[in-house]
Length: 261
Picture 1 (cartoon, rainbow, N blue to C red):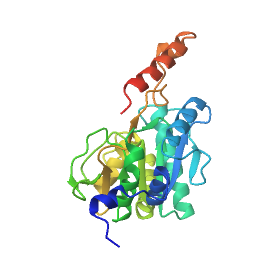
Picture 2 (cartoon, rainbow, N blue to C red):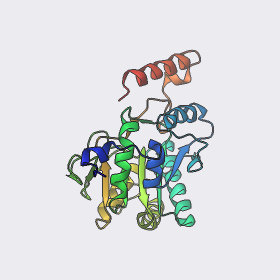
Picture 3 (cartoon, one colour):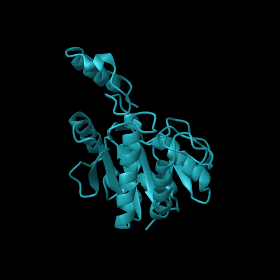
């Protein structure tokens, strides 16, 4: 039998659907969603179907987001809730002894090219050890490509991203991350050792404090943030006014269609 060339290997079909290959590489997918945000849940279900998954898949878990009563020392109630929601998922993963998990926020859209790229990306993720994986950096990634022509870049500990829409963590990272975030939560805002902040900033602080952990990112991005009614800040006037609210929602849908990547 004639051996496959490198190009043929890259093009060889995977026995798993694109999303299944990513689950095999990154672990169970935890989808953070406020129970009352049925709109976001439905949109994310549509996104999952583009990579051969659904919210009914046994390795896709819907995780109820936390809405705290106030902002506390966080920038907003939403930022507080997002931080607590990520921490809750990470605590559960630690307690369950998960080797890896992938966290997705419900306003994530997958890129149109991901269904074609996912199997190769999953292969790259499976070929090397890593602790923290960013699937979306909004094009801000820089670093050393792990394989010529590949889709992964190694990140320096001081690289910061304001993105936490799709991330994956190893069990080794989770074991250190949970107490680190809990310590942040116990401090006052503005503490020089790191106090309450947006969770993407907290992840950046954690990586800087733990340079021994291997952090990598997808390049190009696996997805991007979808335009939707915010959970992080107070809704604007257009989302509080009856009649105007539905027009604003339609405008967001049109924007998402026009700006799809």
